[in-house]
Length: 367
Image (cartoon, rainbow, N blue to C red):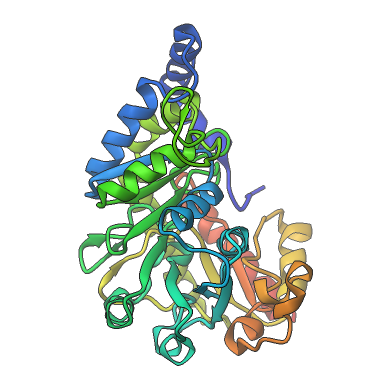
């Protein structure tokens, strides 16, 4: 059996270090905003090349606090990609701003050529999502954000370690957000996230917002939240951060195998388009394929190969967003029924990757 993701294999490779890290937190008796969080924030800031990293308890919290810190409020418009996980848009809704959906480009990311036509005097920010691990077209997006004086927020939940023009994502905009959900390239053993910025005022605001609006205990300067990263997750993430580049390189190697096997067999699928000036870290390896749902089911039933769909229903077509259901984002809508994520994790072997493509070939030949 080959799963879409196998977190047990990763744990086994780090078991002594992980167990020691968790036990040390339990023995310390300090579980919130202690030394592990502070050290992890410092190490991650150095790795990414940013001034400030603030640990929070989820990627969703990171997005919400980022918008709050920037002063995005009711009635403001925020550009968002139509092709993304719904949490990106939920953050906009939680601050009572209005999401303006932008269709995707050939890389499945927000299409910068469609942004300007939707900018109004209410537009305050652009959220870009570096989806599947590939950076957005940041040069063009930066031009637009500067031209119209818009805040630029990077959602790097799927792209930690990815690079655009040799610069890591999360370092281009005013503020950036990370998720450490267990399935991410750098995953905790529960929920976790972080906010990144080079702006000390934004960093100070996030520190207060995540910790009940206080700088000193029981002195609450602003209305805040309880959105702290806990010590156990920070301890786990400290161990894993040392492996991130190796894991991302392994993912790239697996992707290269997929590209080669699919090309050799001349399969009737569309592989991901990759920009020349990026380092893609392959959070997902997503193909386009006809009869997607039928093929997905056969891969599991006949060959015990798990696959994923990212994402089956576009955000603007969800029931919770009935006010947006009539919006048209044709590329996102067209591909929602075709995209299939193949197994992708650092411990996947050459033989397993070949088995995935061999099995896919057998199914396609019988279609």
